[in-house]
Image 1: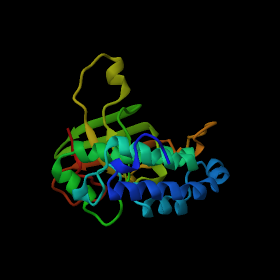
Image 2 (image 1 turned 135 degrees about the horizontal axis):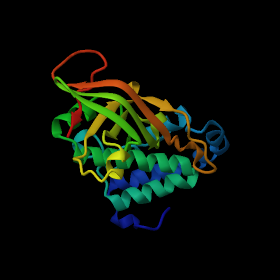
Image 3 (image 1 turned 90 degrees about the vertical axis):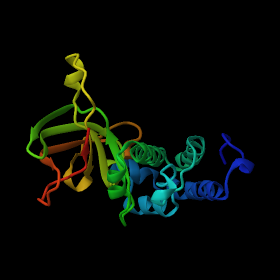
Image 4 (image 1 turned 180 degrees about the horizontal axis):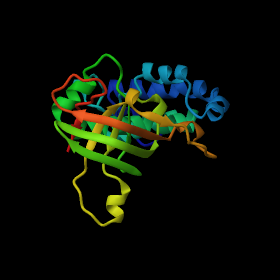
Length: 228
C-alpha cells in the first residue's frame, strides 16, 4: 500500500479501488517486456484496468464514476505504477483528462460524451504544433492539424484538443483558446513515440485534415462538439 493517506480516511469505495490497484500489480509486472516492445498497452491489460474501475476515479458521480479527491487519485495511481510505469502514466493521464473535461466542458457537451454506453477515455493536447482552421458557414473547418504528445492515444475514445497552435504564441498574439472534443475514430494517430522510457505510454502525435465542425447538421465527418 502507499503512504499518502491512511485506510481510516478512505471511504469504502476508495478503499476498494485502492485494493483493486494493489491486486493488479503482479499482473501488470508480467507485461513489462511486451509493453515496451509493442510501445502500447495490450487491450487485455486495458480491459483489466477498466474492469477494476481505474479509469473512472476523478470524474463526477453523476456520470457513473467515483469522484475521488486528487490526493486519493494519486494514491491509487501510484499503486498501479508499481506494476508498470507506462500503465500508471496512462491511467493518470486519462483520469486527469476526464476530470478536466468533466469540469471544463459545457454541460450539453459533457452529457453527450459521458452519457454513452462505451467507457469514456480522453487523451488531450492543449497546444497544437500546427493548425489551419477556417471559419465556415455553421462552424469551423480544420484544414490541417497536428498535435503532440497525445499520451494514451491508442487507448482513448475521445481527444480534447486546442485548435490554436504554437505559432500564435511565437508571434505574440493573445487569442481565446479554442477547444474541441473529437472522437478518436476521426483522428489519425501518427506512430512516432520511440523513447528509452515509458515506451508503452503511446504518447503519439495526432493528426486531422479537412475536418468540419458544423452545428445542427447530420452530415458525415461532422463533430458538433466544438466550443470557444
